[in-house]
Image 1 (cartoon, rainbow, N blue to C red):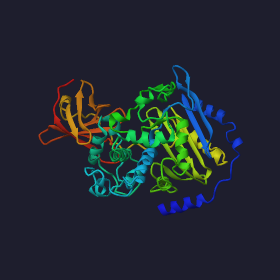
Image 2: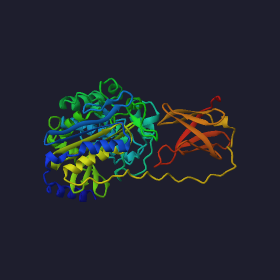
Image 3: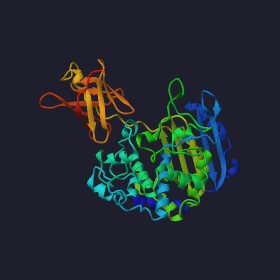
Image 4: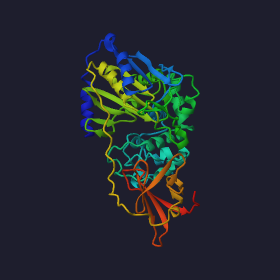
Length: 474
């Protein structure tokens, strides 16, 4: 399938779209974008388009701060989420140019202590495997929101997270492998991932407003505040701070439309002034097949879009969405940023993509939510095997460390570093969280509560937390 995809992309590369009249390219777009902003009930958006090295559009819409009515501009900082993945890959490519890293040598040659749960993956996994999402590891994202760890400690604990597929079997999107690859890049450069991005990407491209910490964003004179959609309208929420959880290389870049257009132009200029042409091409070479006509390169989705060759990546993090697009044959880069959690960023970016390609804009609907996992039928009239206070205590898992389970006379509460799970009795020794996750407690042969099984990653069996000591009631 990958060979078929490569042949298809090659065919597209020699069948360029007809040139578009740039004078008409943006006709009516402002009104359309303003209408879309109102329709999605999003506070602010910023959109950019660069073609043949010329910025054709760099503009903000709406309010970056609903309280002060401060307008969004082309300089407003937004969180880009997983658009960051291409930054991490590009920074690593500078190390390949310097001979400090090979895409295809095992990671253990650079980090001897590195381990994955699968011993075969441990021995063979390369940076290319990590960046193209083919290690066999499913997302396991709960650890990125719940447990405070250093980046090195998070990378060390990945070995305790179970895969659900064979190494190099299929494409499975995974943030933890990008964190690992970014951490490795910092080690090889003798610095941190944050400094690597700043010195290898931001500085040479003149991205003077960009950063890798939402704490730095909030010190800026022009930044968008994160929001969640609600029936009452956009609701402001706190910024997600990646570094608290050891994360970052997977999604921590914050930037403006003006800066991101400089970044996209680097790819259109075959890597100049950051990368060699060979490594710029390597970044855009599909590795994993993610759909019948699309693949994943190094930090970019690659494939067909309405008859054109396109690279893209969306980004999503608490209160923000982003979408970046490269149309190499049209010498075009597109970016859209918003400060809410709707599909508006993708809608804006793809509307501009359609205009560049001379195509009619099509209506886009959000993808349907994944069906919930199967649940057992609830058995009414049952009760827990033991008094509720006996379920309380301290439980441990090698990836998550210790968590505390407390009983407060009406609910059990599982306390992680940054989040709580409130448990309501479901039946027997099974309890239900507010988002309908089913948590199972297990007793030993003497009737003592010994384990808590938490389905924190739906693609694998529930994670087993062993009870290490009791706790007083709360």
